Every structure is written in C-alpha cells, then in structure tokens.
Image (cartoon, rainbow, N blue to C red; front, side, top):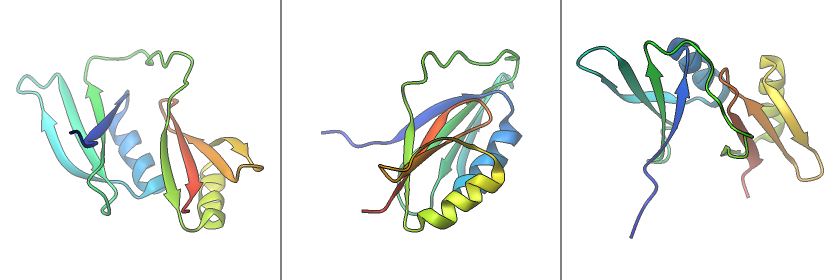
Length: 121
C-alpha cells in the first residue's frame, strides 16, 4: 500500500523557481533541508490543500541546464477558474502549449519543466 509523497524537479536558480511557483501556482515552501557542507538545498512546496509536495533540488555547483530528455513527463494542477488561471499565465508569458479542444494548457517553468493546467471536474 503506497501513497504519493512528493515529486522532484532539479533547478538552476532556486530563488527564481520559488518566485515562479509562488506566482504561477500559489505554491509555498513547507520545509527545507540544506546539506551540512552547503552543496545542495531542498525546498518542498505545498499547495495548502493536499499533502502532495513538489521538491525543488538546488545543487550549488551546477551551472549547466538539466537535460530533460524528450520532456514527455509533467505535473498537472487543477483549477476551478480556467479563465482566470489562463489570463494570469498569459500575462506571465509562461504558456507553452494549448489544447483548446480538450480545454487544457501547459505552462513552462524557468528550467523547462511543463505543468498541465486542467479544470476541476
């Protein structure tokens, strides 16, 4: 018997990513862990509604972008107000793909990860 705990994205600029996830999705840090030698920092973000968390891993010495492969993975968030969400993300300039027929769209974070936005069903 298993339950979802968290999902990880590695990020190059922790402060930029924290700002993006707060502004785009309202995610806030719920806990942090810093390596005793200062080589990495983990920040777990929560939505304040569920127990699921997004872990952002920041490796201090990493300078090159992460290879996201073919990008065939993503997180999905639901919203009761697609119109307001779309407007906000459009203003932020982070919408990277829309499927109007399905009523969904994707936003892209500063490191190239895609996040699907779907209506509450």
